[in-house]
Image (cartoon, rainbow, N blue to C red):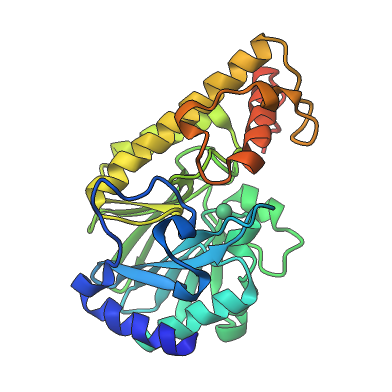
Length: 318
Ligand SMILES: [Zn+2]
């Protein structure tokens, strides 16, 4: 694994070689790694987006069908320390990411931003503390509450906006509204046009709504688009060239609109969905172009149940 990782970093230093993915229109519409003929041995992977900014991909296996998707972290080498936005899902993967960052720079990791507080993005955060005892975790107040029992809750909080100026980098940590977790943050680098959206942007994944705010999520995506970035970076899903990432964000938004509309139709037709585990409505759904999206079977009942909560005015405050 480490030998492969070394090779990966060598490739990464040469920008042209680092974009291993085909970036044409025929990129498969799936975050499932097998649909790109990749296996776990091909990970971790990473690519340089701009000078000193890298998108790093570890792995996550979120459903019983054994589908494997990537989990994306953003790495920013500022000249005065490294900032990581979203970690990986477990300590071994996060340790491996740290080892790889060390091959790139001597700078310590100073900040870790929790854009998504879900386990597949924070589960390895103890590895940051182990390697860098002074590392500061940044997150929303909502994420702080959620992670209150975690050994590494965020201690620097962002309710609306916080500007992180470190070395040559300007990183705006923004709350653009509730979306996938309710505590969602983004990292925006206006000097270079990189916007890390974390799980607000799930590329080619069936809309994952277990703890989502379905309609607000749409508004949050609209705010992201107002920033007019060059790069939209997702929390899960592959990273192709900027034009594809922009188009696919709109496709992810359309998938949300579709799923919200379909759940509404099911509710109006009288189909019940008490919870994901007790959701007869799912049997009557027509998912149209999204029927074959990665994680559809596990995520569809969760999405219906969540939209029903919203329609009933019963979404939790946070
Ligand atoms: Zn996730």
